[in-house]
Length: 245
Image 1 (tube, rainbow, N blue to C red):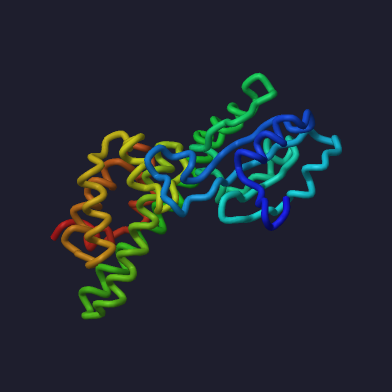
Image 2: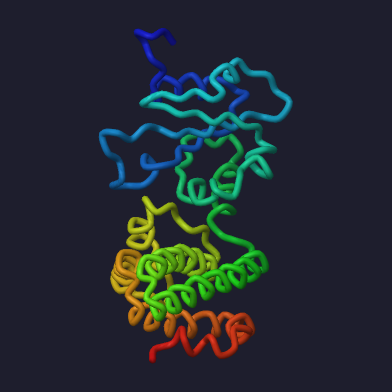
């Protein structure tokens, strides 16, 4: 396309759909989240091409514009290591624009949306430890009069907490931009979305230690029920500092 005729999303989709080397098109980002589109939203599109097949579309690899960003990958890459972990949420909520594999593209997205049970168990144990560490640091810094350090640790703990809660539900954590959307559309089992978001908001902004401890009681119940009691018990007497006083 020329400078006078920039490549648009609709134009590219027509070009790609006419190329039989293309086995799938996947739209991610704001355009794939109902109600999240703004005047600044572009179209983020995965173009999946068959393995070992030549196509002129590779000339568009890395294309970025105000309307259209393209990622061109082979089918093997799309199914495997070619999709990095940080893209998992984006693909979990992406929309299939074209699927020439009788649902094969949609199955890849479904796999992105649910973590393997063993993978989730291991990951949740690690992030639980990180959450407890940041919570304890926040509490101790508050005790010692280090207000800024306490607030920063509290904000860190909320990052780990959200990672933990989604991992316990075997889901990739949404990007911050989509957190409220995700919880409105797909609430976390056992959690009141409004209460959780208000707590995350207040703790991130103020480092409220009393609220941190109150929230920890709910987290502790959830993680013990999920089989992670040993992770918490390893903190020994420090658990008392994390719990309500």
